[in-house]
Each structure stands twice: as C-alpha cells, then as structure tokens.
Amino acid sequence: MKFKHESIEINAGLLIALTLIVVSIGGLVEIVPLFFINETVEQVKKADGTDAIRPYSPLESYGRDIYVREGCFLCHSQMIRPFRDEHLRYGHYSLAAESQYDHPFQWGSKRTGPDLARVGRKYSNEWHTQHLLKPRSVMPDSIMPNYPWLMKNTLDYSDVVARMKAQKTVGVPYSETDEEYDLNVKRFGKDIADRLDINYAENILLKQAEQGNYDGDKTRLTEMDALVAYLQVLGTMVDFKGYKEGYFSEFR
Amino acid sequence: MSEVKQDKTKQGSVQTTGHAWDGDIQEFNNPLPRWWLWGFYATTLFAVLYWVFYPAWPVGDSYTKGVFNNITYKVGGKEVTTHWNTRALLMKDLQEGEEAVKQRKYMSGLMAASYEKIVSDPKMMQFTRSVGKILFEDNCAACHGMGGAGVAGLFPNLVDDDWLWGGSLKTIQATIESGRRGYMPGFKKTFNDAQMNDVVEYVMSLSGKQVDEDMAKRGGVLFNGQGGGCYYCHTSKGTGMASVGSANLTDSIWTVAKVSSQKTPETKRKVIRDVISSGISREMPMWKARLSEAEIKVLTVYVHELGGGK
Image 1 (cartoon, helix red, strand yellow):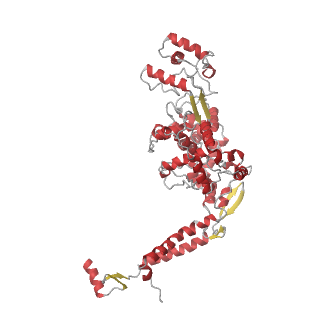
Image 2 (cartoon, chains in turn green, blue):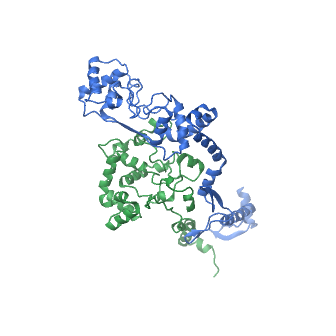
C-alpha cells in the first residue's frame, strides 16, 4: 500500500501524536544531553574540598518563595552572561552550579530592573528593607512597586518541614536520616550541614532570623526578614578569587 | 481579485493537490517560490557548517567541540588554547579587547601613582571622574544617591564636608574597602521621660538652638556623666569621633535625626528623642571582595572630590 499524507491528515489522533513527536525533538536534542555531559555543572569546591554551593537555609528558602510569589522574576533576571559590559556592571558571570538547587531556577528573561544574580551583600539589610517598602525613597527614578505588606505580614513557617521534604524529593540534599546528615557533613562541612537538617528546620529558621535581624525589627519575624535573607545570599557562595583565572571556562 | 482567482481554478490551469472538500473546495499545489527555496538550502548549509566549526552535537558524556575555531587566552602569562566558547571569548576580550587594553593602561597608571599625584594631574583626574561616575552609579548610588547627596536619616550625604568616619583619602579608602558598622545603643531603658527630655534639650543646645537652660544643664550632666555616658563616643564637647563614626552634634548638620526638615521645635525635639531612645544600627557594606584595588582607588578619589574631602 502506498503511503499517503492524507491518512495522517484525516486521523486526528495520529496527527496529534506525530505532531508531539516532531515538536519535542528540539527539546530532546538540546536539553536531554545536558544531563549526561560532564561539564554542564561546574565543579565548585572550596579550598578545604567541600562544596562551595549549598542549598538555601530554611529562612532563605521562604524568602525565595516570596520572591516567586511577588513575581520579582518578571522584572529581575538572575543570570549574568559572559559579556564584558555585564562583567563590569554585575560581576563574574553566573555558573550553572550556582542555580543547581533552584527549583525552578530564577534566571528570568526580562530586565526591567537590574540583574540580581550577585546582589547579595552588595547593599545593607537596612537598604533592602527601605527599598522594598518604598523604592522611590532611595531611588527617585525607580519604577518598582512598593511592597509594604512584607513588613506587615508575619512569616508563616508552619509548613517548613513539608517544604524542605518537597525540595528533597526533587534532589536538594536536605538531610532527614543520620546517614544523610553525615554525607552533608562530608560534602558541605559541619556548620552548613547543621543548617540543612530537616529535623531541626524550625529552630534553624528562627535562629537565623534572630541573628540576622534582616528587617531591623527584632520583635517580629516578618516576610521581609525572609526575603532580605534570600537576597543577601544571592551570588555570594562562590569566592571567585579562590580559583585560577580561566578555571570556569574549562567547563565549556 | 476574487473573480480572477475563481476563473483560474475553473479552467484547471493551476495544478491542485487532488483533495476536494465539500465537493468543490480544492487546494492549489503551487511550487515553492524560488527565493524561499534557495534561502532554505542556504540555511541548511549554514547549519552543517556551524556543526563543523562550533560546539554542536552531544556524544556520550561529551560533545563535538568544533574545529579551526580555537580561542587563545593567557593564564598567568601562559597561553591556553581552547575550543570556541563564550567564557573563553570573554576572557580574551577582557585581556586583549581594545577598550580593555586602553582602560588597563590608565588603571595601572593610577595604581602606580600616589593620591597626591592623581589629584594634581589633570589627565588622571579626567579619567578618574569619568570612570568614577560609572562605578559610583553602579555600586554606591543605590544608597548615596546618583549625585552622592544620600538620603536624610538613612544614608550619609557625601557632597558636604561633614564626615562620620573621616574625610581624608586614607579613611575614605578604608571605609570603601572594609565597610563600616554604625551603632548607637537605644536609651529608652536607661532614661526616664524627664531625663530623656533633658538630654534632648542638651543635644539641641550643643548646636546653639534656643533651649530651656535648666533642662539642658541637667541633660549635660547625664550626657557627660555615668548616667548616659554619651561622651564616650560623642566626646564631652559633643564633636564626635571619626574612629567610631559618632556624629558631631555641634555643627547643625544632622546625619541621622531628620532635624533640619522639621518645622517646629516640638517636632525637632521628637526626632532627636526617637534616635536617642531607639538607637541606630547602620551598615556600609564592604567592597574589597567585589571591586578591584584600582576601582576602589578611583572611587576614593571620586568621593573625596564630590564635596569636602579633607
């Protein structure tokens, strides 16, 4: 029997199935191999052999959720590209390793505001709080909206354990058992492993908020605390002075 | 128009696909336009050439790296050659790009020169001003404002000659490099209401405001005694100390309490009282991890020149 294109065109089910196959080829060819190529995610170790990039602490993780909730990614990217002008303005280009624990990543595709990939510790906590409440009080020509509720809303961290477990399911190495904790000690060092233990999630969160006092109000734990804690860690995990020049271009 | 088209089909002068819907709806089978076809062949050829010259196809746990397209850059004086990739391209651009080479020449000139030499050399100053402006806007302006005027009560003004941490080139450089942490404890538990009012009165009197003499006198005792201990940081004259970043209270330049913008004496007293009772905790971030030595030097001169460098 001679093949006729018409037989596909008049069979809706077959047409849908074949269309899906054709459309997905682009994704299969471009994305799937990245999971198997060794150099996709860079090896970023500190001098003592532990991983430089760690998962977010519980408080930072809440901040990240607020970042997503408020739609910050609609105007702010988190992806410094390897171009000279971006290098001069924002710093070292972003590494794939730096968003390996981001689910989903916040690279973004629109810069109405500046890139935030390395905003961590660039400004003080006081500045972030003031700027989020009233952007125009520090940047008169800013078009960023005010976010006054961040300071009013108490942070609801009742589901902290469930959230960390959910992240763990998709591969973020928070620890639940002793074996997992020991692995984290080896991988990140004890100080950081202690902050990734799901069993103490609530204590870890409260301690960081207490010590950091991100929103300047020690009496309350607000959404502002969480968001500023998240912003202050962005892009700060890798100390690029510890790697020889050109090290990261070997991964491409 | 429609009539013309209809005529064509009727006469059967155009080839059709042979399908017919609803009895008489047919589909033309025109050949693709020549220009389109050649465009298609050209892009196909482009893709094949691209596969050869650039990183393209995944192979196992690696990929084809492309040939005849290597990039050579330097690491510690040694040449490194790698396949084409944007990261190596950036390295090369930063090392050999026309702008980069030009800027590095000026920057290394600045690094070699002393501050006195830079300030007295018009050419170096011209470069410092133009680069400093960009660096300032990218890094400092978020707090200190585009022009350096700061935000009253929050972020210090850099265009006047009043300095919390010192206004010499050396102290400005230290401030930028390592950052500063401004701290004053809150006194709401130390002073009762009457004592607080007395201290506020004394602070007002330091800069020559009209005050209640008796209250100010009592406030002075608290300020300069163990009761408040304000003089530890602000000195007994109230002139402040650059080593701890304490404000000069005698010069009518208010760096924290927004006194100048208040209309009535009552509100002026209120903003001072607020600061004394809650204290201050401010931070200037450190920049040595983010900026190069040369960039910090440029910014130091730029900030020094903004207003009243000392």
